[in-house]
Image: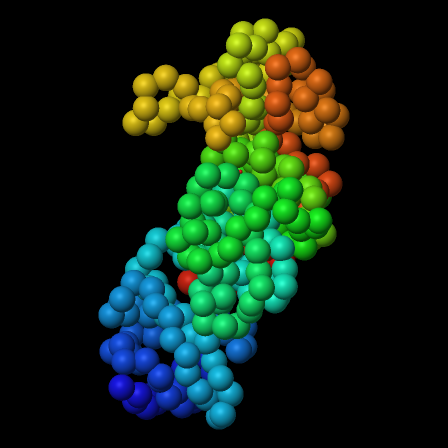
Length: 304
Ligand code: 5RP
């Protein structure tokens, strides 16, 4: 049932909302913050009736799409969710979209699906970079295509494990970097979505560099990596005995380099070792980085 609510916003003028939904609206005293990207608004409450929900409203005859989120969610989750939504908002009708892998991109996939379902955008096709992306796209109703079906990728949205000031990346935390690099590098625009903890001055400072390798070649590849000054370790499964197996049926070797001074050079050198499929260095591929941050308790999205 539609109902009116008069909320006081500490940082904004008073706003009258007429909700189209029948969900109970949170009490205004609960209000924590607002992310204003009109006509989309994210309103954060200390304790909304549901952890996260979405409705449409009219304010001064303007249609608004409103997300209500809980500030109780941990800050990293909040940043990931915001930045995923911000990227999903950049998808336009008729686009072929590369769908990345990981917990941040999962929010982007969810919100692209929601925008398709509520008619904000139409005729979007997704090209998944992993089994995970494929499952999520199906769950949220995004029609899928393979690289054989399309002649271009308009935009790709993907996460990263490290981002340096030149927008170079380390990826592969989800062991999906081989397919991710194929899809992300083909995109006319590659948007990276991260929370601020992923920003580093130099690649390799916080995250090991993933290298996908043919299982039969793991030992010679590890020896070759040691000769380059890296400390390799085979990635082992969690809740699975033995090594992680990629979507392509291969192993992942995570490598500690004391410093990565020349990512472009290292990317080529590693890929030149026989048995290496692909490594997680993404050099000169990124167009835009959307960064979720929290300052003075207020979440926001910054662009690099
Ligand atoms: C998967 C990836 C992911 O994009 C990367 O690990 C970031 O994931 P998250 O958003 O969950 O932190 O490269 O291979």
